[in-house]
Image 1 (cartoon, rainbow, N blue to C red):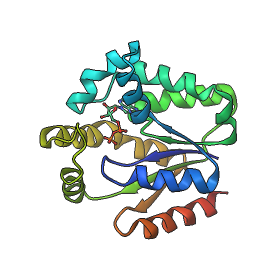
Image 2 (image 1 turned 180 degrees about the vertical axis):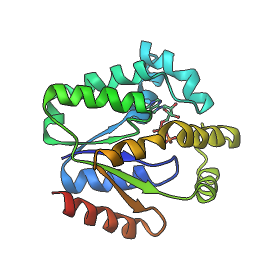
Image 3 (image 1 turned 180 degrees about the horizontal axis):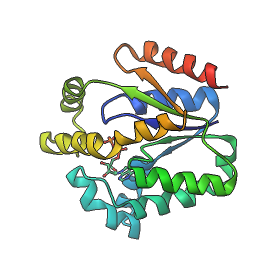
Length: 185
Ligand code: ADP
């Protein structure tokens, strides 16, 4: 299965992604992880992305589309994958659609984890990652609301979108996700 995982920072995507990839044998494609690795290795992409990431802003579409385009061409992606953190803008979604249409491998599902913004802020403020200062958190939530939320309507129109409630225990949320996957498979 080819799945796109959508949800604001702090929604619990990382936790649920780890469970999903293990149980469904999916390759985990986290653009956040890829960019952090590129940044730490000081590659050309990493150097381009660094400043945006530190400010809680999205890196330019063409940078991330290049990264993910290359990654999707690798052999392991044929077994199915979970795209985590991409696409994050309409332009990225359109680029992905074009790429997948060309390859004849359309998406099966876009899975949204939904959590209210005040709850997200509480969770993120308690998490303490290096880029989790209050201003950067606020900026990431704003980026989500303005740039990523429009994707929900985009994927809803193509009939791919399913939403699960992200409030509850890890297990409860995972069960909701499994139920959705059961309906798609
Ligand atoms: P979050 O913890 O906010 O969910 P991620 O770990 O997915 O964020 O990504 C960390 C940072 O990497 C983002 O704040 C952004 O700067 C950059 N990034 C990740 N994915 C993308 C993308 N698809 N488009 C643009 N920027 C991205």
